[in-house]
Every structure is written in structure tokens, then in C-alpha cells.
Image 1 (cartoon, one colour):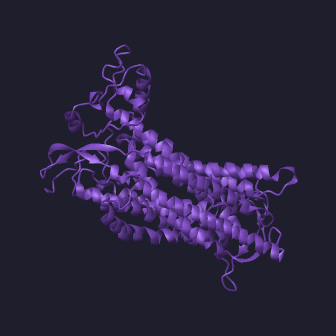
Image 2 (spheres, one colour):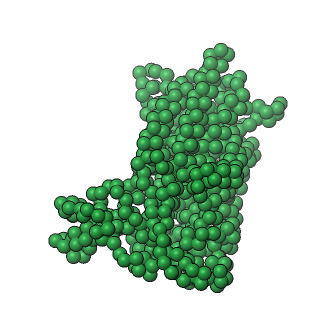
Image 3 (spheres, helix red, strand yellow):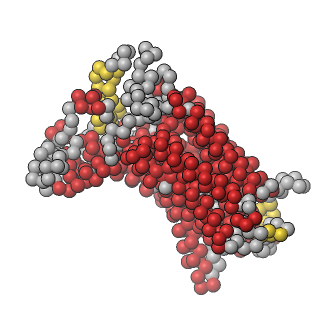
Length: 588
């Protein structure tokens, strides 16, 4: 192929000029992006992994309150990307939305470092015992936390999607490279998380919270410098519609207006542009699917003849975009319980670990939050094994470019996660047995049981996340309507956010219900005299039921099938061919 060939998907540089395929994008551009991701994850997990301990030991919050506040903040971090994605898809584009948001993120990290460093901004401590924080100090601390959440809202949905944009779907070689992109993207994320849980947590508890927050703040600033170095070789997708979200409502309104009309017997009689339109505009035509037929009424030809002439019939491609969104909502709903299970890693698992024997040798004590590093270790080991061994092996058996389908990947992850919470329940039952045998009921008494009993549940959740997190991110990117891929990615982030809010709600309600009438709360301030095993048993039941619902939902999901333009060796479009993504989904 001629080295002067432009990219075939119509991507441009920052100034809007067509870019050459040989000089831009691909992994050489993504190298700058994954560097940012590693440092950003280090910053996030540097705060999130040990936040529950900071709130209880430094700000003297109660266990339930601290778990609730950590979940609420984590939920905000993962839910604000909805706004960031909307701004990117509708107004600023991914690059500029990321730029503005990353500066807000960095400002939040700097303020957070100041809040735990300067004497007038943090509680005063004597011999390691800290007084109660003043309302102003609490306000400053939480303001900094939520500034970080606002910044993350613009960076999280756009940086991974921007990375995927560096690969041309119209180029078979680049499309093959893109199959591995999300695996290695998450690998860089795991590296940042590993450093946070292994090193930053220890620094925070032994060398000071200011240094423990300052290191990731500096790292984040460094990563932004690295990101902007790659600007000349980045590819930028051109928005093909002014307001993608508006088109969704347009379809719903048209379908409602045409609700009394009769659907034609053949989908080919519905409104659709000629093939030449898609060739000239570079848009992708989405094929008709036989689900949610009521929405097809939006594409009845001349269906709006009695309505406002300014509201013409929608096309099949527009209608199918709405069907895709409804299908993704169905899958999104069954990811909320798994996200709730994941929320335990930075909350109750950590508090549970503080009650166990953490000594490693005569003079070294493992920070409870550092056990989260084993989640990351298992991820780092699993990603290369999955990408280099599992995928090629399964590809030979199934013929699927990804080895197994995306929803099969999610299903495997959910099964592993159910196993992990079952083990967590069994370990907590064992911990309660040891407490009764040794009469260790005091809130600060250490249970004579090694913290490494918690290791299996951490490791299994890490392996599950290789299937879940990467699979969900890729699924929602792959199945989103063409002009809504940033917003589509927020299905992944918002699921985690709502899962955190759901965990906050469950913890609060369980504490109130089980603690009423003088009863013993399942999640009290003194975990040695509570029933955390009951709560884990409750999570096991609902996650098992959710797995059944997921299998049902997956079996009914129909995948996007598009038409793209084939190109000859001189980079000229010569004809159109179907791009069938159905093998990438679960086939039952």
C-alpha cells in the first residue's frame, strides 16, 4: 500500500486535516495514552484503596459512614463520565474534553494532597492519635475528593475510546491489532493500580498521608506531559451528526406518532438512504433486526405525512441505533450486582483485614489495603495469558477473532466472581469461629488468624475482572451507535458507579434493619462482634440470582451488523461490504 495513503475511516488531525495511515495512530500513538492511564489509575487507587482507613482513623468516621462515603465518592467517579461523554460526543470531541477534564483532575489531586498535608487543613494528631476534624477541614477534604470525581468524569470515558480510535476499522491489519487493544489498555491500568496498592498504601500508613497522595499527584502531572507529546500523531474521529443523543429521541417520537400505522411486510420497504449516501458521508449503515418492532414504525415511509413536515421519517440505521441502546441497557442492568461485589475490595474487605493478624516477620506489618495488590497481580498475570494463549487456542476452535464471544467472556467472569464471594463468605464464617473459640470480641483486638486467609477472594476477583472489566469496556464500545461511542463507554463506567451507590444503599439499609430494636448489626463498628458473614451470604444469594438473569438476557441479545466500504490498494473506495459483528456476541 502507498505510504501516502490516508486513513480509510476518515479520521483527521487536530486541525481537521486528513491523516496518513503510516505516520499516525496504531500502537505508536497508543503508547502515549497507556502511559497516562497507568499514572491516572495510580492516582485513583492511591486514594480509593485506603480511603476507608483515612476516614476512620484520621477523620474518626464510623464504619458504616466511612463505607457509605467511600462508595458515594467512587460512585460519583464512575457516574460523572455520562456528562463527560455527552459533552465529547455533542460539543468538544474526545481530545478537548479530555484536556479540560484532566486539568480539573490534576487540580483535585493537588488540593487533596494539601488537605492531608497542611496542619490547618487536617486534624491535629498527638502520638498517632488524631482529634476530630473541624467542619471546615471536612469540607475541604470532601471538596477536593469531588473535584477529582468531576475531572475523572471527562477523562475516563474519552481516553480509552480515543485510544480505540487510533485503529482503522476499515483496515484489516489495524482491526486485528484493535482486538488486543482493550486487553493491553487494562494491563497498563493494572500496573498503576498495583503500585498504588503495594507501595502508596504503605507510604500513607507509615511515612505520611501527604507523601502518599503527593506522589500520584506528581505522577498525574507527568502523565499529562507525556500525553501531549503524542499530539502530532493522534487520529481524531469526525462527528457525523451534531447531536447523537437527539437522534434517539427523534426515533422515539416518530415511533409514537406512527403507532397506529401498519408495518410493511418486508423490512426493505422501510425508510433507508441509498448505499451511495453512506459511501459519500463515511457513515456506517446498520442492518435491520427483528426485535422491538414497534420502533420500526419510526422508519415507515411517508409515515409523518399527516404530522409536522419538519419531522421526516427516520432511517432503519437510526432506528437500529436506538435498539442497540435498549439492548445495552438490558446488559447494563445485570452488571450492577457484580459491580456491587467489586465495591467490597476497597471497603469491607479492607476493614475485615484490619481485624486479622497482619504481621510478616517480627517487625513488619502488612497494611490491610495492600492485600488489594493481589487483585492486580492476578490481573497482570491473567491478561497476557488470556491474550497470548487462551484467545489463540479458542480462536482455532471457534473461528471467532476474539476466541470467545464478548458475552461469553462476561459470563465466565461472573461465574468466577460468584465463586469469589462464596469463598469470602466461608472465610468470614471461619473468622467468626476463631473469634468465638479465642473470645476475641474487643473492637481493637486482633483475631489470631492470618490475613492471607483473604487471599483467595482477592485473587479470584482479579481474575474475574480480566473477563468482566475488559469484556464490558469492549462490549459497550463495540455495540454503541457509531456517533455515540464515548457515551456508549459510559455504560461501563456508570455500571461501576451505580454498583457503588447500590452497595452504599445496601450497607446502610442492612445496618439499620439488623440494628433496630437493640439487635446486633451485621456491619457494626466492631466487626469482631458483628455478623459480616450474614452480609456476605446475602451478596452470594443475589449474585447467584443475577447470574441466572444475565444468562437469560444474553441469550436474547442481537448484535450489531454494519456495512462498511471496501477499499482498493490506491485507497479509493470501490464497493461496500457487510461487517458482521454477530460472532462477537453470545450465540445460544
